[in-house]
Amino acid sequence: MFAMCSATDSFDIALAADGIDICETMFDGDPSEPNYQSKIDFNKTFAFKDFELIRNPVVYEFSSIDMTRKRKINKETDYFSLKEFSAKWDQVPTMLTQNHTQLVKGFMGQTTSFAKNTIKSTVMILGDSKINGEARYIHGTKGKGMFTFYGGHDPEDYQHRVGDPKTELDLHPTSPGYRLILNNVLFPAAKKKKQKT
Image (tube, rainbow, N blue to C red):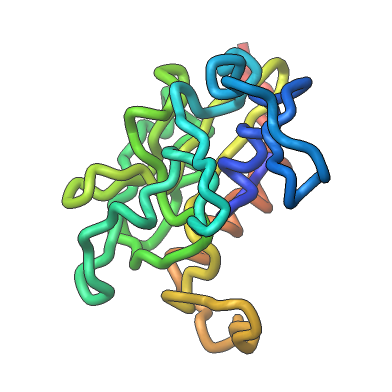
């Protein structure tokens, strides 16, 4: 599974809150359960743990997972680095981080990046920003499958807003940010070669 922007944390929030009414009256007509935060089950999530849900309906945020409001980076210096992996020992992360550069231009979204203290220890950070201490690109396994979460909305539109025109992909043929998306689209087609013994 590959997810970007708010599909990343909202998916895990929904899993953790399975069977718990976390919706306030304005969303479903009845109040949320009392003390619902203490009932959240982080064992059900893919990537995140120990996050606090944001209860204030006027705050444009779901939980403490996302770093958007805590970021202290301006557009000109907003970059994140891809980790290096051994193609011999770490084939999957190597494929997912394959790019023509290790430095990727940052971009915003409903969920821009992930607070490292909310990421499970079993999840691999593929790309992060040391300046801000945030993860931007993560990968892990769940059951018999794998997932990759990528923070931000549009790699070539720094603050893509509702109603903005779509990005013309033809204008960005060598975009490192789009390359990471393409890696995830192509990744399932990769097959191991049979070894001669």
